[in-house]
Length: 388
Ligand SMILES: CC(C)(COP(=O)(O)OP(=O)(O)OC[C@H]1O[C@@H](n2cnc3c(N)ncnc32)[C@H](O)[C@@H]1OP(=O)(O)O)[C@@H](O)C(=O)NCCC(=O)NCCS
Image 1 (cartoon, rainbow, N blue to C red):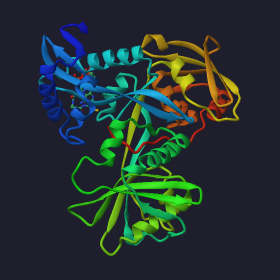
Image 2 (image 1 turned 90 degrees about the vertical axis):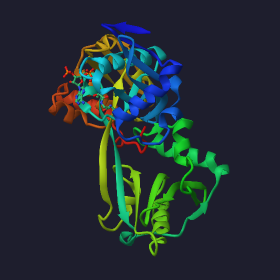
Image 3 (image 1 turned 30 degrees about the vertical axis):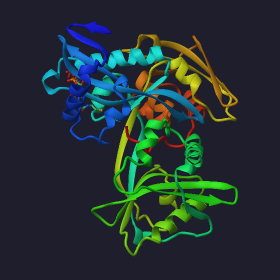
Image 4 (image 1 turned 45 degrees about the vertical axis):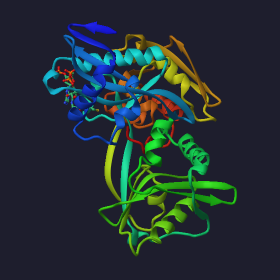
């Protein structure tokens, strides 16, 4: 338990669980998944108290996040809320700083979250690091498709194939979560409308899957999860959805910024209905740079100087050497690239190019260093389909 200026941080006591859920319901206004906090589990939550009274709390869930073909452990933060009467007095800042210290003690190099306010999380060193986008498409606008691959309805016995297909997609992109069971469970269904699961199969096995529900109030298919490994799988799924067009008007899904289905369409008729950035915080520079992967054929080094106003152990100079897709880090060097911890987060995730970060004033380096680091951190655009 930590305590400063009447504020105290620590695990949630059994008698605080229901009051904290009520407080978070009010603070967050809309709950994403009914029963979400119970699903996460009270043991994952931390409380902040002011003069002994419960003022707010948050959840920290261990997950992984794929960067450069490697799954980097991250403390995923969920359900942050302070009761309105306790706001503006530093309660959330104290909660957040204590949580970052705890994540550091756990040895997780990153923390990831969906911000409802960027300003607050930027104060804590988080930066925009990837997108979550939602597409909507009319079934009548599907102008391409193919029935060459197979598509079969599957049940629980195919979960391992679904997980393996998701992991193959996640590993080859940037920013997707290495999903723990607690994220898979709501996708597979928490009761309610029937959840349909289909596997798309090619000559050498699964090339994709889709998990969806048919909406109650509209002629709409809401995709809960989709992963496509090939263009043929995208064409098969588009054909499958077009085959619903006599009764289903539209479908929506959380997709990639460069989405295989959107890209396959003959016209630009898929609407991007929502795009929100999520953020990451580099908890520990050395372990974060070591844990991610790098382009397999890149070989070189970067002399880096990092400034972090909140987590002081990150301050200083580093040399990152990359070979065979992996990085090794030592302290010291020339500080050729100078960045705050937030600029490093955006570059680390592949969300903002180094040349753009320099123009934004988030990092400083000469042209040769920018060109070098652009190759070192080259990756597909960073995104995830989950919300937590
Ligand atoms: C956002 C929230 C957690 C902040 O709690 P708090 O205890 O008032 O925050 P702090 O007093 O520690 O504020 C620290 C700084 O963050 C910034 N900040 C705080 N609340 C903010 C808000 N709603 N919007 C933008 N910036 C905010 C301010 O710059 C503040 O510094 P200042 O008071 O010197 O200006 C709280 O307003 C809340 O629970 N809101 C509703 C739920 C929510 O949005 N949760 C976040 C989910 S991702």
